[in-house]
Amino acid sequence: MENAREELFFAGGCLWGVQEFMRYLPGVISTEAGRANGLSNSTKSEYDGYAECVRTQFDPQLVSVNQLMDYFFEIIDPYSINRQGEDVGEKYRTGVYSRESKHLEVVKQYIAARPDSKKIVVEVKALSNYVKSDAEHQDRLTLHEDDYCHIPLDLLHKYRKTSQ
Image (cartoon, rainbow, N blue to C red; front, side, top):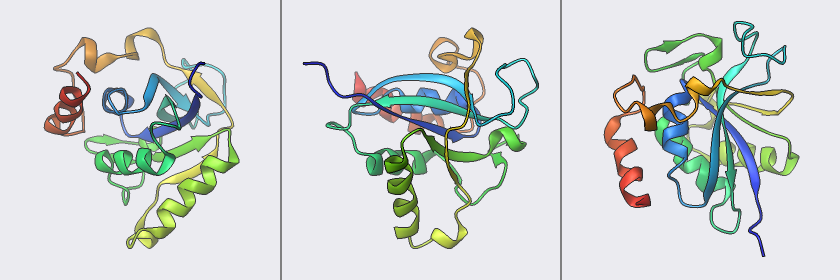
């Protein structure tokens, strides 16, 4: 029997680092670099309101939405609007998107339960549009380890090692 597969879309600044981080988490089946909730169906249109994101498919029997949120909060500044590290602009906003309302409810409850919930500016919205990023953005930090990433390298290496 094939494992159940669910998906969430995580926006946490530059998608290169988010994809590299998410791919190694226990229970994550696959990741894909893309853009969420924009105004067009093209990656060529200068982002048109999109958030850079990572489509994350996971096995809910191995990892919960709350656990994925714990991991996600390790790599973002949840208080920063339209900025993560040196990346600045609307496309670098933080957010969690889903086609499933049950996922969005869990994410909202997760944030509400945090003691710092009043300061958190992470978007939680239904996925209205998704466009896969061009090939040169897929698996970027796996293929080019020295490229820029706002996520601390020791954190990336920690999960790479535990997955091998």
